[in-house]
Image 1 (cartoon, one colour):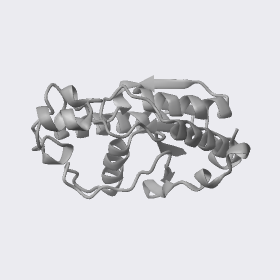
Image 2: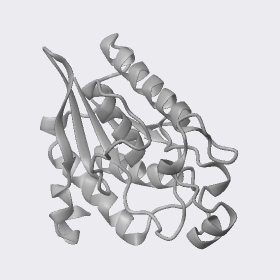
Image 3: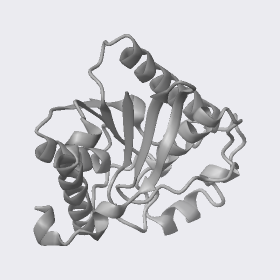
Image 4: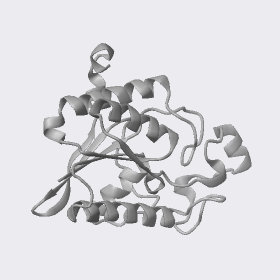
Length: 211
């Protein structure tokens, strides 16, 4: 069984992310099309039967492009969203710095929430619950393997720590997660293991061959 984690494509810069409603850039759409084309070309290897996605706009747009190539429906879920940064979500950076000076993901205490948002502790608990629920459904054959999960960099980072059995905090080193980068998790004799990290070879494909 495999879980293929994919970060969404490039989104608009200059704004706070988190639960931002902003979508992908033109480059982000192209990246997502290349991702879908790559997964479809290598379906004999990935054998994806299920697509799950965060329901934030940038993830949904990425998932739709992949789903069109794989010819599969998408299950959208708020459980796979990035950390809830409350009032700062989608706010232009200068305005965020003026209204909430010094308030960033890695400046919060673990039990300190963003204004009207989540704390790092709450974010970790949510992602841990979503991931463990997915593993349980796969192991009990309630969900058809293999699964593509389109989500966010912060989410993928938490999963790295879960699988490595290391403590996670919002100040822990961040594992690279590029736009539409693939992170492969497989069930082996030793349990669920990361076997592919931030793979982006699909982005080297020329535009004409990706559509």
